[in-house]
Image (cartoon, rainbow, N blue to C red):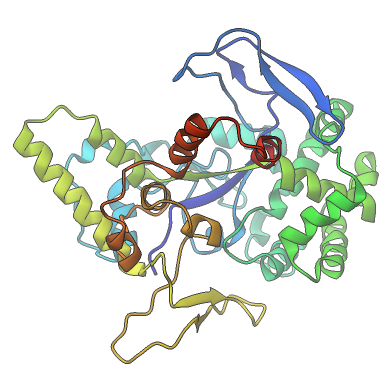
Amino acid sequence: MAASMCDVFSFCVGVAGQARIAVEVRFVSSSKGKGLFATQLIRKGETIFVERPLVAAQFLWNALYRYRACDHCLRALEKAEENAQRLTGKPGQVLPHPELCTVRKDLHQNCPHCQVMYCSLECRLAAAEQYHRVLCPGPSQDDPLHPLNKLQEAWRSVHYPPETASIMLMARMVATVKQAKDKDRWIRLFSQFCNKTANEEEEIVHKLLGDKFKGQLEHLRRLFTEALYEEALSQWFTPDGFRSLFALVGTNGQGIGTSSLSQWVHACDALELKPQDREQLDAFIDQLYKDIEAGNHSCVPNAETSFPENNFLLHVTALEDIKPGEEICISYLDCCQRERSRHSRHKILRENYLFVCSCPKCLAEADEPNVTSEEEDEEEEEEEGEPEDAELGDEMTDV
């Protein structure tokens, strides 16, 4: 199966951002907490604000499979050509316009103690200043008995791909408080986002860990305490506090993707070329996407993946009878995404997996308008007026 772009997870809480447009934070309700409101007209296409996450961490399975990303800002560390070679499985793959790749390997730095990699000296120093001095395992980086490694292995054993969170976000939150001179400020900052009821928190943890979440959560809490206990944060290490911490990450985290190849493609799109040269470059990129498609996705899969043995052994199971000679395909989209329009599915796949799908379903819908499901919904609402369940739709959008 084709490898995806780097999947990472950042915890963004909106206090470290640089505002571009006048906005203000207001209390919305006990269930929603605070919200961001415009204080002036914001026109389509304007940047509202740029935000630097308070903590960020790469998905643990993604890191285990050696996708190289800066351990602090998560910027891709492999060049676009290396990314293409890995994704296509072609060591000799060469990209035109190599000057468009923005990766600067000459600036890369590693922690002198544990060898974790950063994209720059600035990121290495920023990580050390905020949390890495507490979390650095030193020469025990690969020791399976190190408390942090035991915690990460336990997390991988209960949270398989597709990943939606990382226990290391919580570890970096604790480490940030441990290293901070003003611990109370950081505690207040993190704690103000814990506004869920006990039942709501359990639902979030259930979603992250599955049906056996109570026993798994307690096991993770014990390992978390062994590795990171901090007296100033003692409440976070209690069963109720740890559940709240999980819910905080589950509701305020934001998944992002980084890819040097994707950045190279965007730069190619911006080139001013003669029509013939543009046609050749676009054809090359289209073929590159097809080569990456070797993972065999389909919007109507006949197989699915799972990890039933509680380890890294992936099982591919047939969803229907598969005849001799018939291609075995899985889906990179979830059930809801597979029901969206062809254009919406292609947009998700191209942005996140770098290929254009040509499965039977996509070919059968080739004559459909090139609009996303959201655009189709907007057109229907304009024609029919405000739907009766508009309030419910707003709630679902906010989730």
